[in-house]
Image 1 (cartoon, helix red, strand yellow):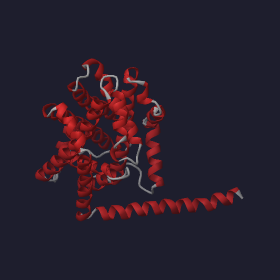
Image 2 (cartoon, one colour):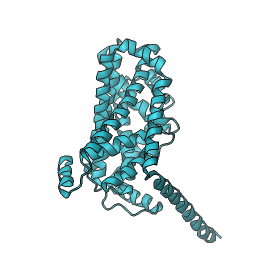
Image 3 (cartoon, rainbow, N blue to C red):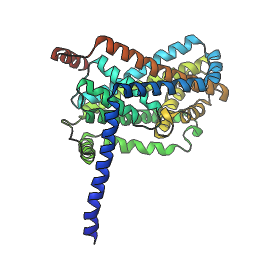
Image 4 (tube, rainbow, N blue to C red):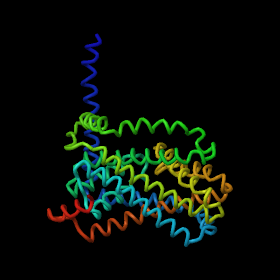
Length: 343
């Protein structure tokens, strides 16, 4: 009987996997159309705008205390952090065999990232898969690189949180300490000897060809280094806003960097909240409580939310304009030159 059950179960599992693959295929077919891509961008931008409009009254009061000059400097730091995060994805994509020039990588990554404002966690990955096709990037490489970028970012954020943990108030991590259990698991899975067979197995279950080449430990370390840089920069924009509202500079530094990294980690795992909305702000306010009262800490969290949304829109807009203005790389010389710049 067990053997018969197993035999009858295998076709069922295969049929389910085939159905999921077919659904994804139909979805990708729809998104290949220019109209569908335009609607995707319009929906994402609309939700970004709604995030700003919905909280504008509270955000405006925060701006009155922080000032436009400080907010502008913080926005520039966020843009630098986003560039570092793009480099995480670009390094991982290159490790799998697709080396993109900077302008092409920026267009695929930043425009695709607008999908994170849509409910669910798949839209940014789907967008990057389809946009990468214009640069001869196989969809399985795009999807794998996007997934690993998220995992590497999560590990880097939690590592920074662990360093800052002695400075964070207990109520910041209270109830969310389970998040740290993901660190040893993900670190183990990122080791090439385990990661590459795991990726091949997942692709086989999805009925997709295996990756042409596996990822190396050096590439993973390189990507993690970029992720750490990104989180330090994004924490510095919180620190700048916090100090402007009267927090002591030295004391606020580990709270800002570690607090935001942890807030993002929890927000990332709260997949039902688009881009971690709501969850991230609550944890960040708790992290800043030793140096700011609730009102000013809330102002920092809300202004930070607006600045990150603005940075997403600016990065996507500039990348789309610059990528279209420069055109696609059309010769082997262009691709070689792009690979040398990446190396």
